[in-house]
Structures are given as C-alpha cells and as structure tokens.
Amino acid sequence: MTVTAPDHAPVTEVPKSSGTRLVDRVFKMRELAILAVFLVMIAITQAGNSEFLSEQGIKDLLLNATILVLVATGQAMVVITRNVDLSVGSTLGISAFATGLYLQGGGNPVVAVALAVLLGIGFGLLNGLLVSLGQVPALVVTLGTLYIIRGIDSIWVGSRQITAADLPGGFVDFGSGGLSAVPWLAMIALVVLVATAYYLKHYGSGREMYALGSNPEAARLAGIPVRKRILIAYTFCGGLAGLAGAMYLARFGNVDSGTGNGYELTVVSAVVVGGVVFTGGSGSVYGAALGALLLTSINSVLPALGVSSVWVLAINGILLILAIAVDRIVALRVASALKKKSAAARTTAAPVKKGDAGHA
Image (spheres, rainbow, N blue to C red):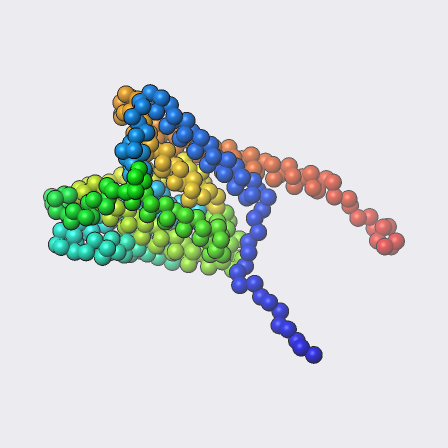
C-alpha cells in the first residue's frame, strides 16, 4: 500500500472580507472615473487649442507625467502597507546629483543609473529598518530622513550646478527622445508600473501587503512576516525614487541643491487622488499612475487654455481634499453596510430549541 503525504499550501492565504471586496470594487470604479475626467479634460483642451495633441504635445504630456508616475508607483506600495515615505523628494534630488557628478567625470550612463538606484535603495532600506524594526511611526521616520537627506544634499552640492552641457550627449538625447510620440522614459515607467501591479496581484508576498494594510494585527496572527513586507515596500520605493532621480537628470539636464524639494507632497497627492487609501489595504498602482497623470496634465492644460498657472496648486489641493473625503465616505458606508448585514444575519438565523435536540 502506498502512503501519500498530504500537500501543504506554501502561502497562507488571507481571504478578503465582503467589506474589503466592496471597497476594491468602489476604487476600481474610481480609477475609471479618474480616467474619464482625464479624457474629458484633454478633449476640452484639444477643442480650445488644436495644437495641444500634436506629436510633440503628446510627448511633452507623457514626459511631464513619467517621473511622478515612477515615484508614485513606489509610494503606492508603501501606502498600501499603511505607511508613508516623505523622503522620496530628497532621495530623488540627491540621486540626480550623484548621477550627474558621475557622468560629469566621464562615467558610463548605465552604471550611473545603477548607482542612482542603489543609492535610493540604501535610503529606502534605512527607512524600512527604522519603521519595521524600530517600531517608529512612518510619518516621524520619513520626515526625519527627509531633512537628513536634504541636509546632506545641500552640504554636498553647495552652490554647484550640473547642466546639460556637462553631460554626455547620448544621455540627454535619451531623456528627450522616444518612439514617435512615446518617450523612452515613459516606456521605462510603464514597464515598472505593469511589473509592480503584476507582483502585487499574482504573488503571495504582494497580496500579503494588502492584508497587512487592511489589518496589521490580523496579518501578524495569520503568519505574515509584517516587518519583512514593510522593509520590502520601503526598499522598493527608495529604489524607484533613485531611478526617478536619474530620469529627472536625463529629462531636464539640470540639477542643483533644490532639486526634488517639496516633491513628496505632489507624490502623496497623486497616490491619494488615484484611489490608494491612506489608511492602507486598498487601491492599486494603476490608480496612483492615473492620479499622477491627472495632476501633471493640469499643468499643461491650464496654460493651453490661457488660464494662469497660479491655479495649479489650488486645483491640486482641491483634488486632494475631495479624494480624502471620498475615502472617508466610502469607509463609513462600507462599515454601515456590514453592520446591517451582520444584524440581518443574526435576525434571520433560526434559534435551536432545547426540545428539538431530543428529536434529532
């Protein structure tokens, strides 16, 4: 007789509750709504300015969004785990200068980009260790590293400035070139975006990040390595911020000590507007990318319509407040719906009488 050992599941699955599924459906609809708003906005602008969607116009639109999409992708993964990284702007700035300094000395562009990514990974690893192992609130940790990295950058860079004339011609050409209206940088960002979304959806460790963000204590009891997942999220976010720094240099060809200053607020706005819930557990990197595309497109749409660019910050703030309000309303309605469902289930459940047990 042959005895077969029972199979063991390699990954502990954390089933989604009906409330989580409802929230996911709502935010998928929200992503479609953001896409619809973006398309309507582009259509109206094109109607008012026929040159807006020229080949160069489309390329500029994509180039403007590329760097923010890349950083928002990494930030979305961190926010999904119920954390935040406020140091991405500083990481972007110091990585851009490090890349430019290396290239200025005659370095290889591919090695320069790799060094920028490694520098970003180092800062992301530092954030992840402080948050996951040190048990320090993410807001406090990353606000501190924001100023630390910015201080290092200011001391290192000083009054120096790297311009396009200091960089290899091929590197600068790559930053502005592309295939017809699609820039090379946008293609890189798209590959990163799709790969990240695939990981979060199809890999157990990616799905565990959603479980962690939804309920950290339940995730811990389910055997999910919480600290390891947080560390991975921060390291990945830092690496993308470093890559974005190299891409920023290729795109603009100009870096100084103020590069990336205040960029973290724009990144967080893009993620939240894109439907990634700030309390964790819901949303997608596609939504974050759409949020980034929407926010950067406003910068192009307003001047094309003859509206002062002063309104850009005000509109971004309004969108952020609306997104947070929508998150809160959805959370309250889901909680109310679950409460009613639970009460209805208790009411309809037939009680077992003592006399019935004897006839069973």
